[in-house]
Amino acid sequence: MLNATKKRYRFRMIVPAYPAFNIYSNIASMTTSLGPVYVATNVNKMSNWDAEVIDENNLRLHGPRSKARGADHEFLQQQRPADVVGIYGGLTSTIPRLYEIARLYKDKGVITVAGGQHFVDDNIMDALSQGIDYVVIGEGEEAIRELLEGIEGKRDISQIKGIAYLKDGKLIRTSARDQLLDFDTLPLPDFSLVRYAKIKVYPVERIRGCGMDCEFCTVKGQARAACPDRLLEQIRLLVETRDARHFFIVDDLFGQQREDTVQFCRMLKDYQARIGKRLDFTAQIRLDKAKDPELLLAMRQAGINMVCIGFESPIAEELEAMNKHIKPEDMLSLTKIFHKFGFLVHGMFIFGYPLENPGCFIMTAQEMVKRYRTFIRKARLDTIQILLPAPLPGTQLTVRLKKQRRIYDVHDVGWEYYDGNFPVFEPDAPLTPEEMQAAQRKIMSGFYRFGYFFKIGLNVLVFPALILFLHDIRLGWNKWYRSWRNDLIRFMGWTIVKEWNLNFRKDRFLEKLQAAKIHVRRAGSHFASG
Image (cartoon, rainbow, N blue to C red):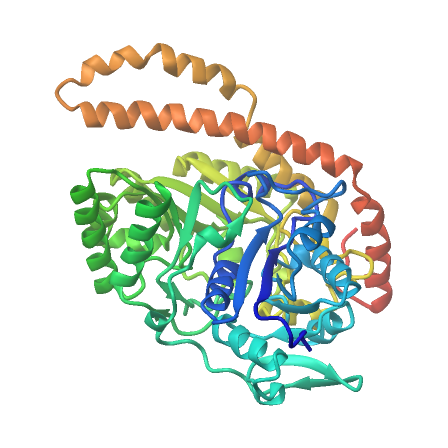
């Protein structure tokens, strides 16, 4: 329990560092995770608690760094001792670092709490054996307040819903907590609590949940939404207190509750007109929303300039396995509509998705790469992201692959490789895990190339040609800017992919992979590749 003589306590919420440099590192250094900010904000509203957030991936503003990676928690604890630390387990690849941080604080007598989508099933007991005192299961805004009151001795911890802990060496898991339905009762997220971070892109949300039921996804259930006014107020607060200009709407599917979404876009358009500033938004959306021109027009007028679309695959059989009810040829025609409305389109793919019945579909890695490249070129995607399937805890994909005994033992291939850049299960024959990873890198390297460096300069030279668009300056600017922007990003992407490849060569993953493959085959997987 806590020191009862203290008048105020400190809660430190920590976002663990990525295990190594990867394709997310650059954007992670410009933003932060919204969930931890929500949790810290709710704690900070308690009468005798102060809260802060330390995002180890964004310490650009005088952040105390350790010699190895992440933040220097020894220094932090000397300067501002925390009484309780919460550690965010939303990304499975950061779990080894999460446990490292937990043990560090546990050794200093600090109470440790963890939460996030990783903590399901056996992972809960694993966490409690790795320096975690309490695991919060599900949404944490209300649970953390009640848990801290319990730690203070003001509430019976055994009666707090949605937590797990050990008592006399025995696992105690309380009854499930109901999902939040009324988001308007929560305080708006306070980004001033994120210390040392230099945030350029601010995450905001209105809707939690997604009813699309994709096999590989951890987000399930009926969508729950706040009113449009609440999201607008989040944005207003950030613009007026932090001069924010760039936002990422983290809703898993923008456009759910369609009428409210259109209303929000119109409100956002009016707000920007009143303050005389043009804001920039990115949103995740489904391809079939291209069939709703009124929604697309409202989005564009509101300043939503980029859409992130989960194409997943250009191969029909893989789309069927993912429960994606769409054909590759339809994806091309729908993408064309997004471009027609002026959106930048970021395409997200999952290469080598395991099929339910792999024997009915056989394709070599070379042919798959060719299909991807052809589709990406025809779709005229502005940016792309190619990931490998990851059997994340709690997904239907993981259940299926476990039954087939295809997932590599986590003791051979650790959680740190569950970031979508490493093969962590036996792929469908004839694909090997090495081929699957090489193909991913080949597609990315073909899209993000050094040659775009020269095109950047060429675009600068042709800038005066905008005079040809004096009849429609906005059209001319958009055409020039899109080309210049894409060339710049593709060159910058080349530097990121290059650095990732250098780090990969230094890593021992391929050595671990060999041991993992042997163990899977001994366990009797019928899908073992060559």
